[in-house]
Length: 325
Image (cartoon, rainbow, N blue to C red; front, side, top):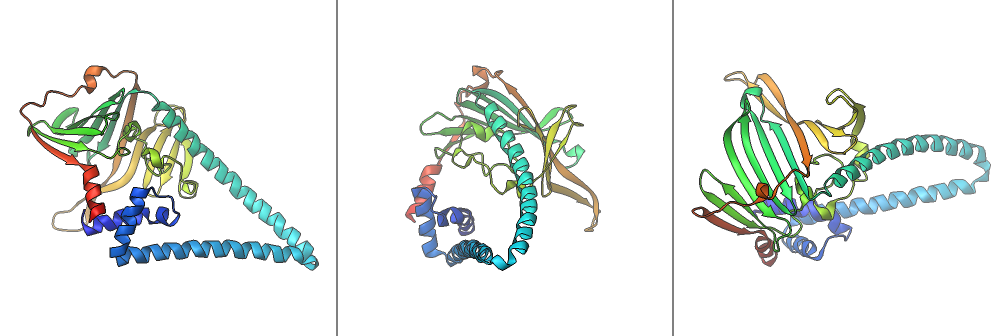
């Protein structure tokens, strides 16, 4: 891992480190990195100062309210202030509760769908302009075993095969095989226990989740503040939710909580030759399709790899090496 990538990883963990909620291995990685990195030390100090300021602000607000309540001479002003506060806070709480309940409901419904041990998922993403084709990822999952195929398609025909991945989330240790069929190469990877589970394949890429990983599977309490929620029915003929975050819009099925379509998140621009003047632009568009209880054993059975060049990679050893440095 190069220095920049290691700093990015550690900085992503600093808030949890300051809150003292990291597991022992992650905490050791952060502490070892902090000894050597002044930049991340400074980032940690900033986070700690922000936390202290927040605590001081909360204490100051509480002290202020206590002083106000002691002043009987301004009871009428206080009562008016409290009334206004109730109206404002009440409106805010109602809005927040609605937003959070919608997002919580969708998250629970989506997770409920993937309690199944048998599902098939297609994720189709435009590469840019119509003539560029689309990237299609197909996932078969049955009783812990999975196969993931990624290809480029155009006009319904495959014009480039990217890779095929086989694995078993119940294997100990967890391993998966990344197969490049045309080049007859296999990358055999041993992952950390929490890196792959069946929710990793769900396609739930919306602002509700911190991550699809099980140790992070919880709602962001702040999600309602930066996510706009509305309803529509045009795309599939029945009502669904539309979640908007920055430049990304996600259509989510009301009944299942599963994504139907995603718009935005990346932009492809074609310029006039020899200039920086945009000729046309295309937003990324993703579509999702799900089937449950349709996958067979043959769909997830890994083929014979005789004659393939095999490369092995142990992610756990890689992380342990970083800890020892």
